[in-house]
Image (cartoon, rainbow over all chains, first blue to last red):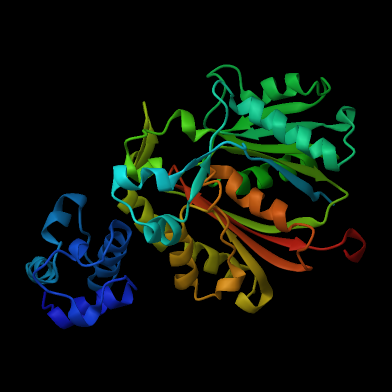
Length: 76
Length: 310
């Protein structure tokens, strides 16, 4: 699956978190950038819906950063 | 025509503050107030059981309504925290309230969807059996089952009970109900010893199921958002109420949020909101929608109308 950093940043923006999307770092865990656990659940749901994938709880450790999300989805 | 005459609540006066748990769970005020949405949760007295809270709700009902106990023909208790495995809690409530022996009493074991299920059940049961007056209780005391070290649940739940008086002297009338179950995922929210909740799974289930379910119910009844005065959603958390509202694309003023001072009260959350607004609600259509343990969900359209207008 072809997924871009821009797309994932748009998903995060749509999740309406407290994170500053313009300064969001791609290689730092989102939870260290004003994204809380409820926001993460929402972001993962939005990704599941957008890309029609099921992300098991056991895989969430690979989806902690923007880069990690892109890498994970690119393997799908 | 049978409907809701009035609703009365019992919310314990004792509360515990989530602000006191900030350090333990590494929380900030924004998370407490705008995400969880629970500042304080209501906690019953030690040793208080589900039936005791029902009795308290009934005592509060007696203060505002002239109840002749001899006229009560049906007593249903919605709870998943019964006093005992045997007998059913409604029998205990029946005994404590000294209801007449010709009064039917049974429990409904459901969590958050329980009030909507219970409302459909009591009205159908009473109608089919020619009954005129009945009591629908909701009562759960999660303070007995929550793991106080579990961040997923320790911040959320409050104890409460409600009683809904069903009669033919009513002002709120159900128009339609719809129900759903996904038993395959029951393990996402269980209590085998202490309460366990997979927060992500329950959030995803609710965010995807509830909006579609409500929309389908409106479509089935040829109604749109313009025909609905308010949506009374189960108060799971502020985040989930906000998420459903956004996905439904309805305005903030149409979706009450009311759990900050007492918490998620399971099947009591919708009747607590209705009890507060029952007198001031203008005539019109209202949506009730609840979702949770089971996984189970239920929605209804109810109409506020003076009986003489029917």
